[in-house]
Image (cartoon, rainbow, N blue to C red):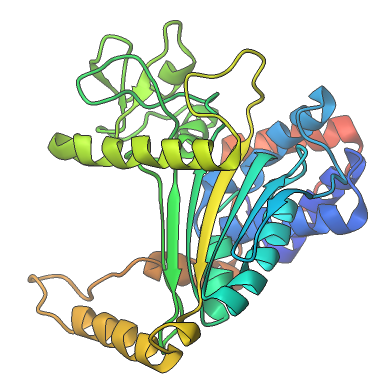
Length: 350
């Protein structure tokens, strides 16, 4: 497993995207976003996605240089079409518009349809919280990628439908970023590329039997990822189902089942709150920070060094990898080397 400096990995990713026909600024923004995911320990949303992005570019399912189209707008809401542009680029464009509205109206909402994969959701919510506002972000896959079966079912019906929430505190943003399934689909992809079994409790086969085989999602008929919740999986699946209805219904995108000819892309719903125009930013920070402090200071079980809150692991991994480098899994690295060779891009030394 090679380990690369994050700047070297970002330059490599940018070079691949440039060779695939992406413009300089856009290639840099996407590469930085992917490597930021790897830095944070979210390899499922990192450079492992590059081969897929390049294939989408070749197939016309991802469009370099796409503009963000505004379809409908009010003082507190905006509906946009990404026109199959890179999600990392179009999402930040949408977010700037929504934050500007929230500064005026206290609460603002934005939607995005026909977007390329937006990557790690917490990249966007954390950026909002850093500005002293709060954000909630939901994403589906336009009804196309169905990999999660309902509790008691064997046929995948919905996607992993992630959600991210971030709020400001005195010690930095408190950030949640999670799928509504027990694991993100990208984590199963990584195990498949490495030819390694998944942990127990992630997957079931087409008959509903537990399995650790990561290829089960590609089988005919396919297996599925389990919803979050274990014996209470109806909670995770219920959240996923309502998320799908809101995202697909409000954006003009789609919910499952997929429409004829539908493109696999991301559909997004984001809400931003400005505490300064509600109970006040000082009050919000006092309450959120006090909550964090109380939970961290609560009694721990024997052997537990610290209470871990959402976002803690990502910050710790980021700090370690900035200094020590990013380990790139063998299966991912092999895919990147093959892609770079095809595009005539020199790989960094490991």
